[in-house]
Image (cartoon, rainbow, N blue to C red; front, top):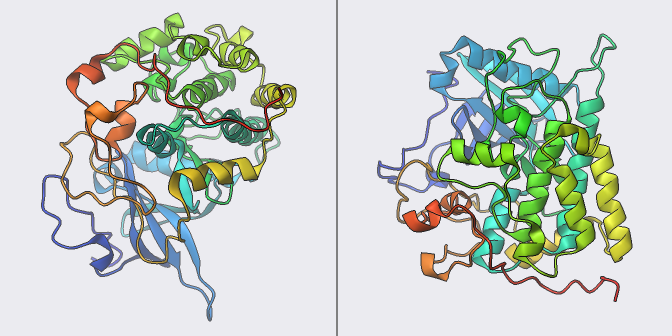
Length: 407
Protein backbone atom coordinates (compact mmCIF):
# COMPACT_ATOMS: atom_id res chain seq x y z
CA UNK A 1 0.00 0.00 0.00
CA UNK A 2 1.39 3.46 -0.83
CA UNK A 3 2.90 5.22 2.18
CA UNK A 4 3.03 1.99 4.17
CA UNK A 5 5.97 1.81 6.62
CA UNK A 6 7.49 -1.70 6.88
CA UNK A 7 7.93 -2.79 10.48
CA UNK A 8 11.22 -4.49 11.41
CA UNK A 9 11.29 -8.16 12.32
CA UNK A 10 10.40 -8.99 15.92
CA UNK A 11 13.24 -10.22 18.14
CA UNK A 12 12.03 -13.81 17.80
CA UNK A 13 12.28 -13.71 13.99
CA UNK A 14 15.52 -13.88 12.00
CA UNK A 15 16.78 -10.64 10.55
CA UNK A 16 18.12 -11.79 7.18
CA UNK A 17 19.84 -8.58 6.16
CA UNK A 18 21.31 -5.50 7.83
CA UNK A 19 18.82 -2.71 8.41
CA UNK A 20 20.70 -0.34 6.13
CA UNK A 21 20.40 -2.79 3.17
CA UNK A 22 16.61 -2.74 3.10
CA UNK A 23 15.04 -0.69 0.32
CA UNK A 24 14.10 2.79 1.59
CA UNK A 25 10.46 3.33 2.55
CA UNK A 26 8.65 6.62 2.21
CA UNK A 27 6.04 8.37 4.26
CA UNK A 28 4.78 11.56 2.67
CA UNK A 29 7.72 13.85 1.97
CA UNK A 30 10.05 11.71 4.07
CA UNK A 31 12.41 8.87 3.18
CA UNK A 32 12.97 6.55 6.12
CA UNK A 33 16.69 6.00 6.55
CA UNK A 34 16.61 3.56 9.47
CA UNK A 35 14.75 2.82 12.67
CA UNK A 36 16.01 4.42 15.85
CA UNK A 37 13.70 2.89 18.45
CA UNK A 38 10.45 1.03 19.04
CA UNK A 39 7.85 1.87 21.65
CA UNK A 40 4.52 0.57 22.82
CA UNK A 41 2.70 3.36 21.03
CA UNK A 42 4.99 4.55 18.26
CA UNK A 43 8.21 3.79 16.40
CA UNK A 44 10.88 6.40 15.72
CA UNK A 45 12.89 6.58 12.49
CA UNK A 46 15.74 8.68 11.25
CA UNK A 47 14.23 10.22 8.12
CA UNK A 48 15.28 12.59 5.37
CA UNK A 49 12.97 15.21 3.89
CA UNK A 50 13.43 16.02 0.24
CA UNK A 51 14.11 19.61 -0.63
CA UNK A 52 14.59 21.84 -3.62
CA UNK A 53 17.97 21.44 -5.29
CA UNK A 54 20.57 20.23 -2.81
CA UNK A 55 18.52 21.21 0.25
CA UNK A 56 17.44 18.36 2.54
CA UNK A 57 16.85 17.96 6.24
CA UNK A 58 17.17 14.99 8.58
CA UNK A 59 14.49 14.58 11.23
CA UNK A 60 13.28 12.06 13.79
CA UNK A 61 9.99 10.71 12.46
CA UNK A 62 7.61 9.39 15.12
CA UNK A 63 5.09 6.99 13.55
CA UNK A 64 2.06 5.68 15.42
CA UNK A 65 2.17 1.89 15.15
CA UNK A 66 -0.54 -0.02 13.32
CA UNK A 67 -2.13 -1.54 16.39
CA UNK A 68 -2.59 1.79 18.18
CA UNK A 69 -3.69 3.49 14.96
CA UNK A 70 -6.90 1.43 15.24
CA UNK A 71 -7.71 3.16 18.55
CA UNK A 72 -9.41 6.53 18.24
CA UNK A 73 -8.09 7.70 21.63
CA UNK A 74 -4.49 6.81 20.75
CA UNK A 75 -4.75 8.71 17.46
CA UNK A 76 -6.14 11.76 19.22
CA UNK A 77 -3.43 11.67 21.89
CA UNK A 78 -0.83 11.48 19.14
CA UNK A 79 -2.24 14.58 17.46
CA UNK A 80 -2.58 16.33 20.83
CA UNK A 81 1.15 15.86 21.37
CA UNK A 82 1.88 17.55 18.05
CA UNK A 83 -0.46 20.47 18.87
CA UNK A 84 1.05 20.98 22.32
CA UNK A 85 4.73 20.76 21.35
CA UNK A 86 3.99 22.94 18.31
CA UNK A 87 3.20 25.74 20.77
CA UNK A 88 6.56 25.43 22.52
CA UNK A 89 9.60 27.33 21.35
CA UNK A 90 12.67 26.66 23.47
CA UNK A 91 16.14 25.35 22.68
CA UNK A 92 15.80 22.73 25.43
CA UNK A 93 12.62 21.20 23.98
CA UNK A 94 12.77 19.12 20.80
CA UNK A 95 10.64 20.97 18.26
CA UNK A 96 7.84 19.43 16.20
CA UNK A 97 8.36 20.37 12.55
CA UNK A 98 5.50 18.62 10.79
CA UNK A 99 2.49 16.39 11.45
CA UNK A 100 0.29 14.50 9.01
CA UNK A 101 -1.82 11.39 8.41
CA UNK A 102 -1.19 9.40 5.20
CA UNK A 103 -3.04 6.19 4.44
CA UNK A 104 -4.17 6.01 8.05
CA UNK A 105 -0.59 6.31 9.30
CA UNK A 106 -0.12 9.13 11.80
CA UNK A 107 3.33 10.65 12.00
CA UNK A 108 5.07 13.71 13.31
CA UNK A 109 8.49 14.98 12.34
CA UNK A 110 10.66 16.18 15.20
CA UNK A 111 13.99 17.91 15.47
CA UNK A 112 16.68 15.24 15.30
CA UNK A 113 19.23 15.19 18.14
CA UNK A 114 22.58 13.70 17.16
CA UNK A 115 23.28 12.05 20.49
CA UNK A 116 21.77 9.68 23.06
CA UNK A 117 19.12 9.74 25.74
CA UNK A 118 20.17 9.74 29.38
CA UNK A 119 19.13 6.13 29.77
CA UNK A 120 21.70 5.00 27.21
CA UNK A 121 24.26 7.50 28.54
CA UNK A 122 24.03 6.16 32.08
CA UNK A 123 24.10 2.57 30.86
CA UNK A 124 27.31 3.29 28.95
CA UNK A 125 28.83 4.95 32.03
CA UNK A 126 27.91 1.90 34.14
CA UNK A 127 29.47 -0.48 31.61
CA UNK A 128 32.69 1.52 31.70
CA UNK A 129 32.55 1.99 35.50
CA UNK A 130 32.87 5.70 34.92
CA UNK A 131 30.63 7.93 37.05
CA UNK A 132 29.13 10.97 35.38
CA UNK A 133 30.98 14.10 36.64
CA UNK A 134 28.87 16.38 38.82
CA UNK A 135 29.45 19.39 36.59
CA UNK A 136 28.12 17.53 33.53
CA UNK A 137 25.15 16.10 35.44
CA UNK A 138 24.18 19.52 36.78
CA UNK A 139 24.58 21.05 33.32
CA UNK A 140 22.20 18.48 31.83
CA UNK A 141 19.52 18.63 34.52
CA UNK A 142 19.59 22.45 34.68
CA UNK A 143 19.01 22.67 30.93
CA UNK A 144 16.18 20.14 31.10
CA UNK A 145 14.65 22.22 33.91
CA UNK A 146 14.86 25.32 31.71
CA UNK A 147 12.97 23.56 28.92
CA UNK A 148 10.29 22.27 31.29
CA UNK A 149 9.91 25.68 32.93
CA UNK A 150 9.19 27.15 29.49
CA UNK A 151 6.55 24.47 28.90
CA UNK A 152 4.98 25.05 32.31
CA UNK A 153 4.67 28.80 31.71
CA UNK A 154 3.46 28.65 28.11
CA UNK A 155 0.32 30.54 27.12
CA UNK A 156 -2.11 29.16 24.55
CA UNK A 157 -3.51 30.91 21.45
CA UNK A 158 -6.48 32.10 23.52
CA UNK A 159 -4.20 33.88 25.97
CA UNK A 160 -4.84 31.34 28.73
CA UNK A 161 -2.14 29.20 30.42
CA UNK A 162 -1.74 25.76 28.87
CA UNK A 163 -1.43 24.23 32.33
CA UNK A 164 1.08 21.83 30.81
CA UNK A 165 2.58 19.03 32.88
CA UNK A 166 4.88 16.60 31.04
CA UNK A 167 4.07 13.66 33.40
CA UNK A 168 6.72 11.43 31.80
CA UNK A 169 10.05 13.09 32.63
CA UNK A 170 12.64 10.31 32.88
CA UNK A 171 16.11 9.32 31.73
CA UNK A 172 14.75 8.09 28.41
CA UNK A 173 12.92 11.34 27.67
CA UNK A 174 15.89 13.68 27.98
CA UNK A 175 18.30 13.72 25.03
CA UNK A 176 21.88 14.98 25.03
CA UNK A 177 23.68 15.82 21.81
CA UNK A 178 27.32 15.39 20.92
CA UNK A 179 27.35 19.18 20.48
CA UNK A 180 26.33 19.71 24.12
CA UNK A 181 22.64 20.31 23.46
CA UNK A 182 19.96 19.04 25.86
CA UNK A 183 16.38 18.42 24.74
CA UNK A 184 13.27 17.29 26.60
CA UNK A 185 11.24 14.96 24.35
CA UNK A 186 8.01 12.93 24.27
CA UNK A 187 5.05 14.96 25.49
CA UNK A 188 2.79 12.06 24.51
CA UNK A 189 0.97 11.83 27.86
CA UNK A 190 1.27 15.50 28.83
CA UNK A 191 -1.56 17.03 30.82
CA UNK A 192 -2.79 20.32 29.34
CA UNK A 193 -5.95 22.37 29.07
CA UNK A 194 -5.99 22.09 25.26
CA UNK A 195 -5.78 18.29 25.12
CA UNK A 196 -8.84 16.68 23.56
CA UNK A 197 -8.21 13.45 25.50
CA UNK A 198 -8.26 14.05 29.26
CA UNK A 199 -7.12 11.49 31.82
CA UNK A 200 -10.00 10.25 33.93
CA UNK A 201 -9.72 10.94 37.70
CA UNK A 202 -7.78 8.19 39.44
CA UNK A 203 -6.14 6.93 36.23
CA UNK A 204 -2.34 6.78 36.51
CA UNK A 205 -0.05 7.46 33.53
CA UNK A 206 3.74 7.51 33.54
CA UNK A 207 6.78 5.41 34.54
CA UNK A 208 6.51 4.06 38.07
CA UNK A 209 10.10 4.90 39.10
CA UNK A 210 9.77 8.56 38.04
CA UNK A 211 6.21 9.44 39.03
CA UNK A 212 5.59 11.84 41.89
CA UNK A 213 3.68 10.63 44.97
CA UNK A 214 0.56 12.52 43.88
CA UNK A 215 0.85 10.99 40.42
CA UNK A 216 1.08 7.49 41.91
CA UNK A 217 -2.06 8.16 43.96
CA UNK A 218 -4.04 9.50 41.00
CA UNK A 219 -4.39 12.93 42.66
CA UNK A 220 -4.57 16.25 40.75
CA UNK A 221 -1.19 17.31 39.34
CA UNK A 222 0.64 20.53 38.66
CA UNK A 223 4.14 21.37 37.40
CA UNK A 224 5.74 20.22 40.67
CA UNK A 225 5.26 16.61 39.59
CA UNK A 226 7.84 17.29 36.84
CA UNK A 227 10.16 18.83 39.44
CA UNK A 228 9.98 15.56 41.39
CA UNK A 229 10.80 13.52 38.28
CA UNK A 230 13.78 15.77 37.56
CA UNK A 231 14.93 15.10 41.12
CA UNK A 232 14.91 11.37 40.34
CA UNK A 233 16.91 12.00 37.17
CA UNK A 234 19.42 14.12 39.10
CA UNK A 235 19.78 11.41 41.77
CA UNK A 236 20.41 8.67 39.22
CA UNK A 237 22.87 10.67 37.12
CA UNK A 238 24.95 11.69 40.12
CA UNK A 239 24.93 8.34 41.96
CA UNK A 240 24.70 5.82 39.12
CA UNK A 241 22.06 4.02 41.21
CA UNK A 242 18.33 3.47 40.93
CA UNK A 243 16.39 5.93 43.06
CA UNK A 244 13.15 3.98 43.55
CA UNK A 245 13.42 0.27 42.86
CA UNK A 246 11.38 -2.86 43.36
CA UNK A 247 10.26 -6.07 41.67
CA UNK A 248 6.98 -4.57 40.45
CA UNK A 249 5.51 -1.21 39.56
CA UNK A 250 3.45 -1.43 42.75
CA UNK A 251 6.58 -1.79 44.90
CA UNK A 252 8.28 1.09 43.11
CA UNK A 253 5.22 3.32 43.46
CA UNK A 254 4.95 2.41 47.14
CA UNK A 255 8.57 3.48 47.60
CA UNK A 256 7.80 6.78 45.87
CA UNK A 257 4.76 7.50 48.03
CA UNK A 258 6.71 6.68 51.20
CA UNK A 259 9.82 8.56 50.07
CA UNK A 260 11.97 5.45 50.53
CA UNK A 261 15.29 5.92 48.78
CA UNK A 262 18.90 5.61 49.89
CA UNK A 263 20.36 9.08 50.54
CA UNK A 264 23.21 9.86 48.11
CA UNK A 265 25.68 10.36 50.97
CA UNK A 266 25.11 6.73 52.03
CA UNK A 267 26.11 5.60 48.56
CA UNK A 268 29.11 7.91 48.40
CA UNK A 269 30.54 9.51 51.53
CA UNK A 270 32.08 12.23 49.36
CA UNK A 271 28.77 13.23 47.79
CA UNK A 272 28.55 17.06 48.02
CA UNK A 273 26.16 18.01 50.86
CA UNK A 274 24.92 21.06 48.93
CA UNK A 275 23.89 18.82 46.03
CA UNK A 276 22.26 16.30 48.36
CA UNK A 277 20.16 19.10 49.85
CA UNK A 278 18.89 19.94 46.34
CA UNK A 279 18.07 16.28 45.67
CA UNK A 280 16.21 15.93 48.97
CA UNK A 281 14.08 19.01 48.36
CA UNK A 282 13.25 18.02 44.79
CA UNK A 283 12.19 14.57 46.05
CA UNK A 284 10.00 15.83 48.89
CA UNK A 285 6.83 13.72 49.10
CA UNK A 286 4.79 16.84 49.92
CA UNK A 287 4.61 19.08 46.81
CA UNK A 288 4.55 22.17 49.05
CA UNK A 289 8.06 21.29 50.28
CA UNK A 290 9.52 20.92 46.78
CA UNK A 291 10.94 23.64 44.61
CA UNK A 292 8.08 25.90 43.55
CA UNK A 293 9.08 25.76 39.88
CA UNK A 294 11.49 24.02 37.54
CA UNK A 295 13.23 27.38 37.27
CA UNK A 296 13.80 27.40 41.05
CA UNK A 297 15.40 23.93 40.77
CA UNK A 298 17.63 25.21 37.96
CA UNK A 299 18.72 28.18 40.07
CA UNK A 300 19.49 25.92 43.04
CA UNK A 301 21.72 23.76 40.83
CA UNK A 302 23.50 26.82 39.50
CA UNK A 303 24.09 27.95 43.08
CA UNK A 304 25.66 24.59 43.95
CA UNK A 305 27.91 24.87 40.90
CA UNK A 306 28.90 28.39 41.93
CA UNK A 307 29.76 27.34 45.50
CA UNK A 308 31.79 24.38 44.23
CA UNK A 309 33.38 26.38 41.40
CA UNK A 310 32.12 23.90 38.82
CA UNK A 311 31.75 24.94 35.20
CA UNK A 312 28.33 24.13 33.73
CA UNK A 313 28.54 24.86 30.03
CA UNK A 314 28.25 22.92 26.80
CA UNK A 315 31.92 21.94 27.05
CA UNK A 316 31.25 19.78 30.12
CA UNK A 317 28.53 17.83 28.28
CA UNK A 318 30.62 17.51 25.12
CA UNK A 319 33.55 16.28 27.19
CA UNK A 320 31.39 13.64 28.87
CA UNK A 321 30.05 12.24 25.60
CA UNK A 322 33.49 12.26 24.05
CA UNK A 323 34.91 10.37 27.04
CA UNK A 324 32.20 7.72 26.74
CA UNK A 325 31.79 7.46 22.96
CA UNK A 326 34.78 9.12 21.34
CA UNK A 327 34.19 10.88 18.04
CA UNK A 328 30.85 9.78 16.58
CA UNK A 329 30.05 10.50 12.95
CA UNK A 330 26.75 11.97 11.83
CA UNK A 331 24.00 9.34 11.48
CA UNK A 332 23.58 9.87 7.76
CA UNK A 333 27.16 8.71 7.25
CA UNK A 334 27.63 4.89 7.33
CA UNK A 335 24.87 3.49 9.60
CA UNK A 336 25.59 3.73 13.31
CA UNK A 337 22.18 3.68 14.97
CA UNK A 338 21.56 1.34 17.88
CA UNK A 339 18.78 -1.15 17.09
CA UNK A 340 16.90 -1.51 20.36
CA UNK A 341 15.67 -5.03 21.13
CA UNK A 342 12.21 -5.71 22.49
CA UNK A 343 12.80 -5.44 26.26
CA UNK A 344 10.05 -7.97 26.93
CA UNK A 345 11.75 -10.69 24.88
CA UNK A 346 15.05 -12.57 25.32
CA UNK A 347 18.07 -10.77 23.97
CA UNK A 348 19.00 -11.80 20.43
CA UNK A 349 22.61 -12.61 19.67
CA UNK A 350 24.26 -10.31 17.18
CA UNK A 351 22.42 -7.11 18.22
CA UNK A 352 24.00 -4.15 16.45
CA UNK A 353 25.53 -1.49 18.68
CA UNK A 354 26.15 2.17 17.96
CA UNK A 355 29.64 3.12 16.85
CA UNK A 356 31.61 4.25 19.87
CA UNK A 357 29.92 1.82 22.27
CA UNK A 358 31.35 -1.47 23.47
CA UNK A 359 29.72 -4.89 23.90
CA UNK A 360 27.76 -5.20 27.18
CA UNK A 361 29.71 -6.60 30.07
CA UNK A 362 28.97 -10.00 31.55
CA UNK A 363 26.79 -9.88 34.68
CA UNK A 364 29.63 -10.63 37.11
CA UNK A 365 31.66 -7.69 35.71
CA UNK A 366 29.02 -5.04 36.40
CA UNK A 367 29.47 -2.64 39.28
CA UNK A 368 26.61 -2.41 41.72
CA UNK A 369 24.52 0.61 40.94
CA UNK A 370 23.69 -0.66 37.47
CA UNK A 371 20.07 -0.44 36.45
CA UNK A 372 18.92 -3.68 34.80
CA UNK A 373 16.27 -2.11 32.60
CA UNK A 374 18.87 0.34 31.29
CA UNK A 375 21.14 -2.51 30.34
CA UNK A 376 18.36 -4.44 28.64
CA UNK A 377 18.22 -1.59 26.13
CA UNK A 378 21.87 -2.27 25.38
CA UNK A 379 21.33 -5.98 24.84
CA UNK A 380 22.13 -7.43 28.26
CA UNK A 381 19.51 -9.09 30.47
CA UNK A 382 20.11 -9.13 34.26
CA UNK A 383 20.09 -12.23 36.39
CA UNK A 384 16.95 -12.71 38.54
CA UNK A 385 18.90 -12.05 41.74
CA UNK A 386 20.10 -8.63 40.62
CA UNK A 387 16.67 -7.72 39.28
CA UNK A 388 15.11 -8.57 42.65
CA UNK A 389 17.43 -6.45 44.76
CA UNK A 390 15.30 -3.88 46.62
CA UNK A 391 18.07 -1.29 46.48
CA UNK A 392 21.11 -1.04 44.24
CA UNK A 393 24.17 1.16 44.26
CA UNK A 394 25.68 0.73 47.71
CA UNK A 395 29.09 0.46 46.05
CA UNK A 396 29.20 3.49 43.68
CA UNK A 397 31.08 3.34 40.41
CA UNK A 398 34.41 5.10 40.11
CA UNK A 399 34.06 8.88 39.93
CA UNK A 400 36.66 10.73 37.87
CA UNK A 401 38.33 13.74 39.49
CA UNK A 402 36.68 17.10 38.84
CA UNK A 403 39.59 19.53 38.31
CA UNK A 404 37.51 22.66 38.72
CA UNK A 405 36.32 21.84 42.27
CA UNK A 406 37.41 24.36 44.87
CA UNK A 407 40.02 23.05 47.25
